Length: 295
Image (cartoon, rainbow, N blue to C red):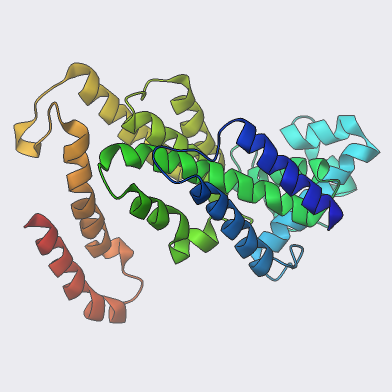
């Protein structure tokens, strides 16, 4: 507990030095509250981080095992970590007791193994203290949400405090973003990309980093955002007017207005129906959602 407390205080002081807790006109306590609440939620729900009954437990268990290879043989650790050389034999030698790592045979774009890779670094930095490793995951999550807020806040002239509460404290974002899985890392890529797009820096180098992060932790999400980002950049660069779609100089606001319609249509699409019974009960409501969005 002492190590966890020291790391927490050190991270807060470091973030304060770089003005991390000050964003826009938001009250200074806002980010402190968000960081504290998310850390509390993470500690409450993941009090037993190596519980292999849940996905996060497998990730943490395998990450701890991978990080300990560094002490046994740094060269073998690098080969396993990067996926070069006779990795299969090394995995059998050092990581035979792992679950998710052993069952995934893919290479660098294995989103499962990439979560384990990053958490292995966290475990090493945390001296294998699971709560400190959890603290690093929460920090990643808060950074991603902060960037996401910075992007969306450009579209909101008032009630930014409400936007902040929605992004940080909705039940789904409150819990799943601190989950010891892929969500926190996806938020970093997504937040970085959204911040750059909404602040007019869509061609900044960090946008490519954001897309790469999305590819690393969910390849199909990265592909979808890459396509959307390319279309957006082309529209903004050429400044075309597509009257039939309502796009032109105000491409971004128009796209944002189309967002709820697109989500409603996607929700009403057949591929989102898990069962015939669900189609019969929920499809009419989704059609109404599409109609209301069109109006």
